[in-house]
Image 1 (cartoon, rainbow, N blue to C red):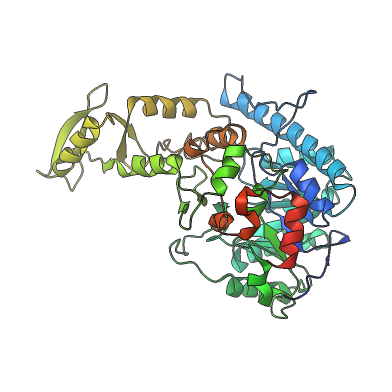
Image 2 (image 1 turned 60 degrees about the vertical axis):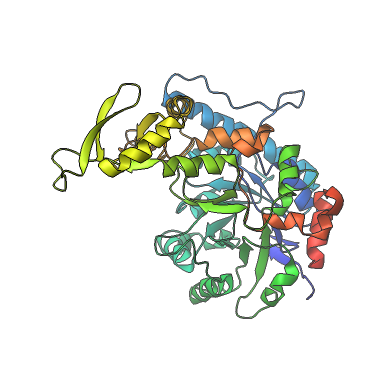
Length: 468
């Protein structure tokens, strides 16, 4: 493989290897600091970051406010304090080597307040901020205000062009790099647009080439591009290294750092990673953010898929298409009459017979059938909303205006804060949302991990740098 040369980023020579930021306590100060100590660029999550008591135990994010607004303020306070703590740990662990970034999702609730709250108390500890999941127009302004570098995460040249023309062109000195996150390969939330087919992945080389072409047209030819999503062995990407068409390239690893000694995820999660097979990762659109996301196909994803399948369309008496094909049918505990297609009655009876006797309305003029226990759980989760997103289809929360999206809640989705806190801190990985990149199945195939070997971050970075 070609020699992996260092690159100048955020004012320092570092290896062109980035630890991808993974939200809700998964990328923390220890992993980020260890990656930086290995001369790379570490990233800790500023999304619901963990804080600790004096004895080292995690302060679980339990909410006591009686209203959503009160709980939202608690969420922001948790986020700022946890982010500060993780920045301190990352700085101490790095020993002054490498670079350290904080990762923020722009579509998380109170994103700007959390980010600025962290940066106000971590001057000199954090060198940059990465940000995606939305269009973070204020990112350059915020980074410049705190004298750090910013790394917007985009999934297309078009997205970066919009960000550049509307905002970033005024804050170019602090643009550290542009992160291209492949929407078909990366884990977590992905930036697939309405014009892109989730079933027809496009080659990243051509898409990154288009991004570089635009960057050169506005004088950013020497600004690095970070390739994120689907990177496992650098030898598979050898034609990207020192390629004049692409210019300076850095590689980001989000999934592989999950399986390290420093990684804070539960032991059962690490064991699950070693069992995955090709095809075990699903690109789905159940997320309350409205984005596609990639996760392990476990019981959690199966239940959401089944829940969405047990769905029929509703009609009204004044529907212009109404005819003898429709009939009123009493459903649920209250035996409310719904106008449904006669041909759907047999399916409805079968679902009820199997225990899915409760009905919940969706925003799309349909109903889904769930068990009474699941119906109670969904309604409770919606009531307990703490505004963890800027807008949420599951609870209809919005952190601007009248704190409502104005749409009906969608019971086909889920409380993302609840499940991500659970998967990060408990052992029940099969029944919670378990994000992973589409190459996570390679853990079970890569000889590096044979006999259940779990490397340290330093061992992982050294291995990656060899190309194999």
